[in-house]
Amino acid sequence: MIVENLDILRPTAKMLHIGGKDIDVSFIPCGITFDVDTIIRELQSIDQKKIMMNGEETKKAFDLSIDLCVAFCTFKYPELDKKWFMENTDAKQIKGFSSAIKDALINAYDTGENVKNSKAPKKNK
Image (cartoon, rainbow, N blue to C red; front, side, top):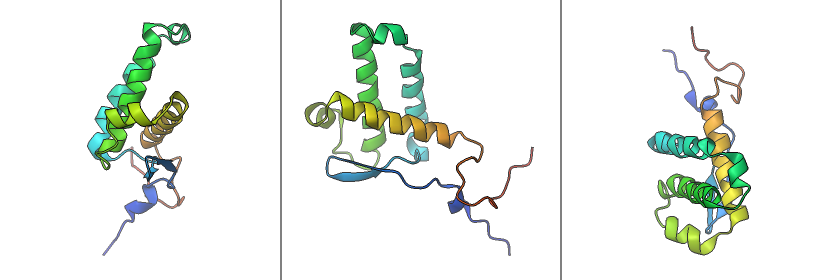
C-alpha cells in the first residue's frame, strides 16, 4: 500500500485575531476559492492612481476589500458578516486582513514553493 501525505502540501498556519476569533489565513478553503479569486481580480482591475485620489474608486476598493474579508470569514464564522465588519473594524484592519487573504490565494496557485516537506510528490508534466 502506498500512502501519500497530502497534509504536507498545506502551508504553515498564519493566524489573524479578529472578532474574538483566531482565523487561519494561510490558505483558501476550496468552498470559497472562486469567490475570493473573483473579488481579488475586481480589486486588481481598479486603477491604482484613482484609488489614491480618495474618490469613487477608493470607496469601491474599500467595499471590495470588506467583501473579501466577509467572503473569507463567513465561510466558518457566519457572525463575521458585512455588518459586523462595518461596525467593528477600521481601514487598517481591513487592509491587513485583505492583504493576508490575497497572499494566501497567491500561495494557493503556487506550484509547490511553500511545501513543508521537500519530498512532497511532484506533478508530472
